Length: 312
Ligand SMILES: Nc1ncnc2c1ncn2[C@@H]1O[C@H](COP(=O)(O)OP(=O)(O)OP(=O)(O)O)[C@@H](O)[C@H]1O
Ligand SMILES: [Mg+2]
Image 1 (cartoon, rainbow, N blue to C red):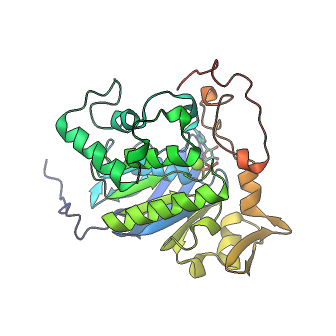
Image 2: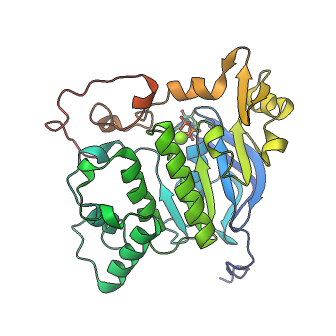
């Protein structure tokens, strides 16, 4: 069969194209008849309330959620599972904090062929692991066990994993969720530096716009089955956001920060406070050493941090 294939030349094809895409989960329509194009070298902030479809969109780009209608293309080609052009950092990362594995081995585990075993990496993989550790400034973390690293340091290694194999598109699902503002800033700066150094495109989902403001080129805002892609000035407006939230939204700018308000409630903050990572049918990820939300006054107590590690 000769499918008309466009040349998959990363030099000129857009990194990601949605052409009249509808995404459904069960009987729910998550995204409706949506088209947009993301280009080489763009840093895209993916925003939207809980359940808007940020994760689902990323999973569709990975070929894990097939489009009910329309076409998703990556570098000019229809999506395939296991596409080496894509690096993915999933949203649920809770089990990591308790693991004793060394930083370097942890990164190597994500290399092809080493996913399910202890890494006995070949020379090429070793070189790639060294390269990505260097790239994220993580070489000093290589010998230390994961369990002794801070959330921000673990995030560095997770980013290193995503960069194995030289992807052209990074899908980073909520990399900031577990981090305090200081570490959030460091992660955004790290991703931005790596993204520019490699000239790759990044989809970076987050609950708050402000930490991403200086890093992003455009915003992809999801809500109500609709997507709006554009600059901050184009998208973060009363009419656009009111349509996406399905109610009247006010946008306030104060000292270079932007606040998205519904009545007197700041909607992004409100979402964030209710964020938890046991919402995707992964009950084992809850209840031990999950490294999120501690900066938000939740103060969970994990009495048995070490004796309670059912890894996922
Ligand atoms: N198997 C399923 N069947 C039906 N609906 C589902 C299924 N899985 C997820 N959903 C729903 O799909 C919607 C989109 O979920 P998704 O995880 O993509 O949102 P999100 O924008 O990533 O949210 P969050 O900010 O909480 O991470 C949610 O309302 C979710 O409850
Ligand atoms: Mg999500």
